[in-house]
Amino acid sequence: MSHTWPEIAEMRRGAALMLQGCPWFAWQIGDGSYRPCRYPAQLARYESDIFEGIKTAGFYAIRPDDLTRWGAIDFDSHGAVGSGHWLDVARRAFDTLAPKCAEAWLVESSPGGFHVVTFLPGLVAARDVRAMLGECAPAGVEVFPKQDIIRGDDPKAKGSLLRFPGKHQAKGTWARFIARRGLIAEPEKGITPAAARTGKWKEPKAGKWKESTEGERLESLYAVATRGISITGPRQRFNAMQKIAARLKGRAKTEADAEWVHDTFYNRHKRHIGTPFVESRIEFLTWFRKAAPCNVELPDYPLSPAEAAA
Image 1 (cartoon, rainbow, N blue to C red):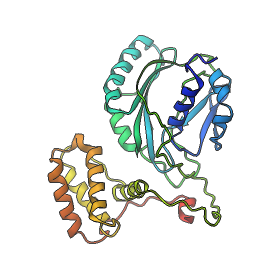
Image 2 (cartoon, rainbow, N blue to C red):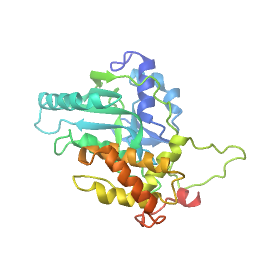
Image 3 (cartoon, rainbow, N blue to C red):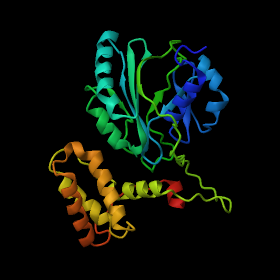
C-alpha cells in the first residue's frame, strides 16, 4: 500500500506528467543515488512496485529539446534549519505559483524538506520556467530545471533530476502531499516524445516518418529564432525583438508565423516589458518586413552527433 498516493491511477497520472515525453527517467537505488533508464515502458511494468514503495523513480526536469512542462523548487532541510522554517516558505511559494499554473503540488519530500512542483498546460522553454520559479525561490534554494539548455556536445547529458513522490529507498521515509491545486486531466495530450541524445543514428523504416504538427513546427521556429536571446530586465525588448525579426526573415513561412513568435516571446517575458502588446507587435512586423534574410548570426552552439547526422 502506498503512503503517498491515494490510488494507483492517480500515481500513474502524476508519473506521466513528470515524464513529459522524455526518453529516459531514473531508478533510485538503495544508497539513495540514481541509475538512468532508457526504457520509459518500465514505469508501467513496475507501477505496482512504485505504488508500494519497492521501487522509486526520478524524473528529469528538462528534455533533450530544451523544453519542459514542469519545474520545482527544492526546499531541503540541511544543517540546523528546521522543518517549520521551510514549510512556511514553501507554502508561500506554492500560494504564489499555483494560480499561474495548470497544476501545482506542495510535497513534503522527506522529513523537513519540501518540493513545490508546478505544471504548465504544454511545453515551454526551460529558461522561462526557471525565470518564473526563480522569482519565488530564496537564495541558495535549488530550482528545477537547473539548466536553461542541455548542451549538444554531450550526448549523455540529461539535466537535473527530481525524485517522484513516494518512498525514499535510502531513508525509508515516504513523501506526503500537503496541498494540490489544479488538475491536468490528460497529462500526455499534445506531448510529443523527445528524441534522445544518444549520439547514434538509425535509419527509420520506410513510411515511418511522422509529420510535425503545426504547434511543433512553430515551437521549432521559435527555438531557432530566439536561441540565446532572453529579456532579464527593462529596456531590453527593442534589441531582442529586432534580432528575432531578422532571424525569422527567410525562415517564417508567413507573417502569421512571425506574429506567433512575437506574441509567444512577448508573453514569456512580459514581466520585463513596458511597451504595450499591440504597439510591440506592430513595430515587430515592421522590422520583419524590412529585415534582410537571416542577417543576424546565431550563437555557435555545437551539434550533438544525432543532430549532425539528421
